[in-house]
Image 1 (cartoon, rainbow, N blue to C red):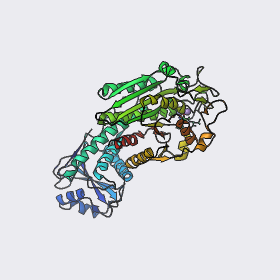
Image 2: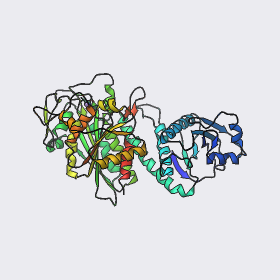
Image 3: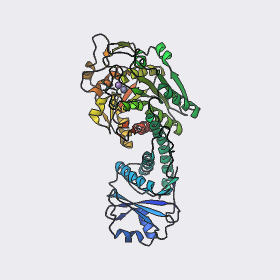
Length: 497
Ligand code: BES
Ligand code: MN
Ligand code: ZN
């Protein structure tokens, strides 16, 4: 599927379908008005039938519109003029794709460039959002061993840009969107794989591949079990000890040209399966714990976007791969672990494993002297209880990172909400025989988990995203959402000054 931005003569261009908008109460968009004029008022005559008013969600497919060279015109209701938001635009494109997928439309022109979605730099966000929405609704999970081949249903989508002065910005928007989409799709693909295929070793192979794909900018170092032991990462290795699939931590180092001195690290929790360990999880829905590597998948996807766009930044992406299983070698409730930082942890629940893997990863990162470290993890069920499945938990002690993530979140509609890290919570992590226990009391579980991590993130500015609710959808159509790849990408794009 190819996507282009162009300035076209709408009536003369030959495609399978032109998409234009109609605002509420029969108000034409500029593009719809143009087609109406070209066809001597044909659209006006149809509107008199009253089948479509321009309300949000309405659609009418027209064939053989007089003097229009394209085969079809899809008239799409946009609701009240100037009230359109990114979320309503998303709904609109969900409907458009659903409709066009059913008929044999291959080439499309979307003439929406005059539409205002209430953001600064309107044309940029319009083209970027639409491109990402289209890919989102066309994404299909690759079935294992299935004979059905995934093929894209469209060949060509052209975004018609009415104002020639906006072509350059539209071009940039499309370029960014395609790179972000590569990131989102790669994150989804790897996250959707079953845990017997996508284990920690597999994750590290995928990371290694990036250095072959982007040899100029990416190098990858993989830390295996032996190396972890030498480094003293005994919290990380304890989590992996119950599994035959050994832990692997992949360090993806990206360096662009003309970079500033700022170093940013992204750490993804990569539990390719979390059974809970000896503190085993209930059987129902345990299969969904293959998504406990969503953080790593998001980091992997984000690194792809960064490399595609050759961003002028220095970024370290870490996939903290591990599997939490039961076995004769498994770590137990009661164990006391010495972390790489030297601080000790009493294990009270082996299912609170993400923080054990992450705490050593956070310490490991100190050797690169990063300015900013952001970890991304499906860390707690408590976060899902607190914020549901559309908002990720956000934690930081740094106001700059709070502002920057808020900004990126608003721009991308990838929602986050900040939860506090007050010292009161820290007290619940006390242990009689170690520096910390690995769980707090039964309350505020998302916060106590974040507080635990904060003890290992003192050497740099740090933020933590709990994506337990947002990274995947459960149920019959279960699957990775690709979140928060766009948020991370936008955060990074905004760091280029
Ligand atoms: N991976 C889970 C968190 C999780 C739960 C993600 C449900 C998505 C959906 C994590 O390792 C875990 O098991 N956390 C425990 C912590 C508890 C033992 C303190 C939890 O949330 O129950
Ligand atoms: Mn767990
Ligand atoms: Zn987990």
